[in-house]
Length: 252
Image (cartoon, rainbow, N blue to C red; front, top):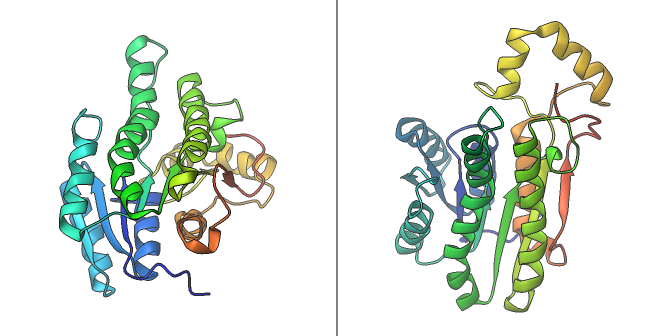
């Protein structure tokens, strides 16, 4: 199926590794010109280099998006380099341990706040061209309790932000959706670290709470995101799509 993405410009935040890197690569395979953004300049350059080796156009923009002006700068640099912006994937996320005000403030900002600032910066260019697709990578933790309360709340807020933004931007031809991955395994990721620390506990988790009996892969999330970014998903907006293999519990 031709998704009609050739020549479109996409920006993926948090894209030096894992889910973000897979999304950027998936968009590139479909012919998008892709801007990648993350704090680690070296890993970012390596990921962008791999995409270029595949024959695609990739721009690496190192940035710490938790700094208030950085999301706007990254969007501005992407538009200046490519001449526009068609797709924004708000993938950056994470959390900080603890239940104090600092942990809550950081967790809410790195998930929701960064997505709000990046989307706000991208919307004028999309509105001017009469089309666009914004995606927020949320989590099954957004509707299943079981992890840190701040993370659960932040992911739930991302899902509702996507729904609300979709309603507001529909007249402008801009679609907004959330994608909620379940437990995704990749090198250097949280689930790999947990599996290394306590393999027996993770084996029980796989057997009891993941009906498919396995973790998901970044590419399985990316496949859904790439489809949603395309005109083939023209009637899909305001949705939250779970990519979780019917996962029954968000964490251990």
